[in-house]
Image (cartoon, rainbow, N blue to C red; front, side, top):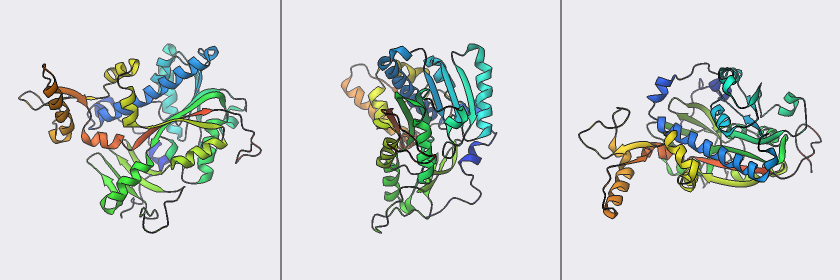
Amino acid sequence: MTSAPSDVPDAHTFYNNPQQQGLKERDESRILYMRNFNNWIKSTLINEYLQRLKNEQPERSNEIHVFDMGCGKGGDQLKWQSARVRFVTFADLTENSVEVCKQRYNERKNHSSYKADFYTLDCTKELIQEKLGSSKPCFDLVSSQFVLHYSFDKIESADRFLRNAAELLRVGGYFIGTTVNSCQLVQQCRAAESQQISNDVYSIHFDPSVDLSEKTGEGIPLFGAKYHFNLHQVVDCPEYLVYFPLLEKLAHKHGLELVDRQTFKDYFDNNKYSGEARNLLARMKALEYYELPSDRPDNNRGLPINHNQYRHAAKYINERNRENRHPIRSCRTLSEQEWEITRLYIIFAFKKTRYIKYDDDKLPSQ
């Protein structure tokens, strides 16, 4: 099994890199539609739980305060704008990301529906309540997108992360997010040669210290099960497995009870035909237009297309045509390689059901 080279940055170093892709580079990315699809997943998840809050606590409909935990460079700012929340607290591990996030907010400030604060904060080590200078719950929704898996290097980090998610969350509020589908990842790596998986746009291999074998009896560690994830022009740093039953147990200690857990594929299937989510699919260009081979240009971006990566789409079109008097030649989809990556992610949602008294700065007591 190979290991990550010594010069590969950790998450802090990688995400603190000031370089950013321009719009032109993103539009030409081979995973443009997958990135749009992931954004659709996040938008749909956020909209679902904001609507739940408004239905369950109508008195707070115009007062919703969001904690964007691991906000990065502010990629979800327009989601908060569209949802018309009242206040957003942005926090991220890296100072450069927070600065870019703040700049983006200030550029839109005159047209923004919400006010905001910004903090450089390592949520695996520091406490947000100390940054805010208050222990009074103020958040209605905590959103942590593609971040949780970085906290599972050790129990102290994961526990501190969940405390930050829960401590200032009001009872009845929600902690939502997206993270790696660790069970699927382990299953695929176990079945693969050299215990690593890849295609043209991503690669994953485990640290040599992690034994995935089911025969040795050693078992995968609950914390610190490190693997290296490289995704084309997006991610290139170590991450850690999140054993979901353990996450549930830790969350329960902080007053959080599981509401939902679904793979991206299941969440897509369960929401793709529903109201606003269906409209968002088109507006966000979350699926690629695919047409059966013909003499016309291959696709709407003018990029060469490998039809082998769309065999599933061709099969769907042909099956539809056998049942339909009005034949079709196209559909909306992702490439097989992009669908393969989406299977490695899940959405989750927890609800704050009770307040926890913290006797020290490490572990909660009940």
